[in-house]
Image 1 (spheres, rainbow, N blue to C red):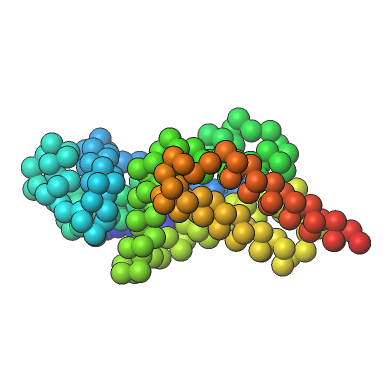
Image 2 (cartoon, rainbow, N blue to C red):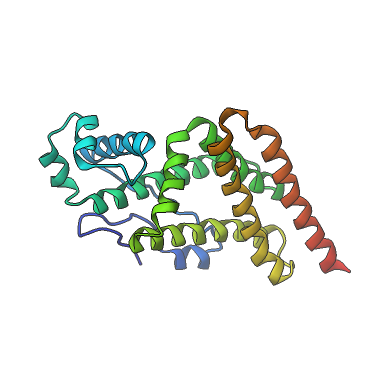
Amino acid sequence: MKYRYFEKKYTVCTRSYTNVFAAGGSFLREESFHFTESEEKILQAALQVVSEKTISGTRMHLIAEHAGMVQSNVHYYYKTKQELLLGLQERVLEEFYSIRRMDRQRSGDTLEEQIHIFFRQKKHMILEKEAYDFAELNFLVHSKMDEKIRERFRQSYAEWREDIREVLSRFCPDMDRGEKEQIPYLTVSLLEGASIQFLVEGREFDADRYFTAAEEMILQQIRKAEKSKMT
């Protein structure tokens, strides 16, 4: 099963999640969402405009100006602002997915290392990919007004939590089901909380201390759940 978020030409190139689970793999999509050179140029321009103006202030003519294109060319690829925003949303998500994929390839196969991936990735997005992280928060706000963006946001959070849950299932197979459901929610809340803190405080936000403490908090919760299961 492949997921469609746009008209005809926009099909997410992913493996079936059902098949991945059957193979004992991860929920994290393992294939990239491919954009043409022109689409990438437009989406990077859109990312810049969103960073400067937010989504509510984004206009097609501003994106065309930043992309160095006439507006009719932008409309050739994205007929409406909503269609372009959905494309940008997928581009932002792909940035998150790709970093996590790379981290998995170079990380050790232990519970601690696999949990660390999620915290390391988020810190990298906040400090090194600020425009993408800011755009994600913008999409979160905009999802209140756009059902399609809200649905994709809901799905991306479900994917995020399921990827964490898969790690727990692999390394803590006997963990209580309730804890296995709750810990991914706590983890995602801590990770997204960092983005909000950075948005408010900027570089005054001590990301190193925050992520070290947050990661240890989750690991302690996992150990507590494991110990509780043994008693």
